[in-house]
Image (cartoon, rainbow, N blue to C red; front, side, top):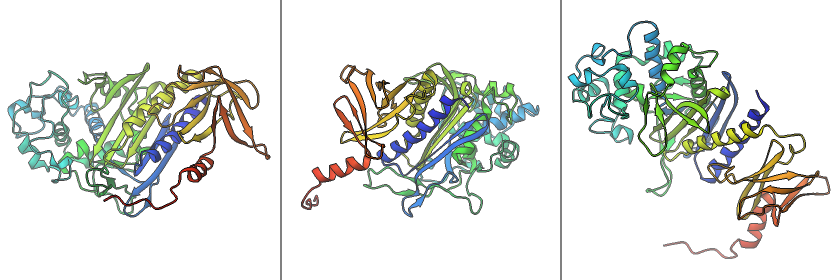
Length: 456
């Protein structure tokens, strides 16, 4: 592994831990897979707020719409076995559909361009107000015509991937033909989990009830398992998406199948540029092509990205309905890009590191290349407008670059205690210190001397 990538992965883990604590999320799990191997995995927070169970990397989460990529991989495997074609009409494989639905092709359904209803007449299964549809209920919904003309635009449809599940016929087939050959030992296509498997519970927002509540999250997805039912760890999820990259050395699918799955089939209509392949999101960030998917199950938000140019896949799973996994993935991509462009830290700046505080919050000193960046871990992109320290001596430097309202050109120095350990840092006129020191100072200066009245 390149040294810059190792440094980036280390900082991403530290930054996500800080973010998780700062915005008071129940738990988050993150895993990194490089060239097919798990190179780092972390679990922060709790698996269950009611019991206080600590989250570990072995806990499994509902990964929701990531299920679509597994289902699409199943279709591609059947195609490789010459059991179907992507331009087959759905009606060739599933009976009892409305004629307009039956005429849509497998490729249209996989790329969300078949014009199908998103979630049917009652989407209460996604807000826990009703069970997920069984096969007969799903087929009853699909006796209705398409919502729009097929092949005219991207239009997301959970019902469509439920229909694809009927083509495959059983999640048991997906487990045998996709999950097990991919080496995924912590993945199940639906609830319930095997006895003894650790499971992270979902959680509500704090509002409107006034506190977070635990959502069991263990309800079976029935006929919608192929769209939203899968359960996995972050490590297994990252392993799977790493295998979908066209340049992956090991995969359950041929290179041709992976290229077809991950190419841009349809542009997603929204404010920023995004695309969809066959059961896979695709896009470009700062010149890097990526593939992956997101997921939202009641109580869980997740995001996974595979970056072929780095031979890296990252999966971030959060167990709350307001989980920040998508934002953290965006930040992780920005962190990777900074380290890739600047390189691993030089020997001279390597020990200029750590998280330092004032009452305004934290600052991270992050050595990259021949500079030290003053990152703000509170930001979704911690390197946005980061000042740059040029190190001029063992404990001296200057701000070689800073934003207009910052302290460009001013001196930086480190202070050491009697044992020779760095105790605090001066960045221009700002004295930043360890968290424990600042916490004591805040308590001494601002802790109320009398009990505050309880609000009515």
